[in-house]
Length: 64
Image 1 (cartoon, one colour):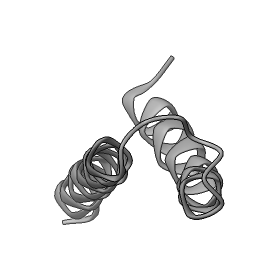
Image 2 (cartoon, one colour):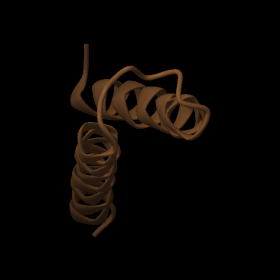
Image 3 (spheres, one colour):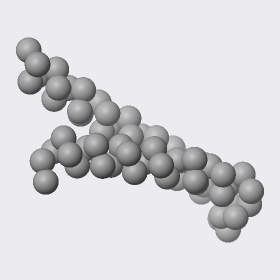
């Protein structure tokens, strides 16, 4: 699988998981502390940001 395709899958999956984790945390359906669920959301945000940065950087290099 190419890098751009894997980046796209990770970004899309992360964006789909974000509201699910947030909603489950807000409704108390995650049986972990708020600190853990906040940590999961922060890690997911960092992963999405990193993959977007990689994709933009690669696109800039290929387009120039």
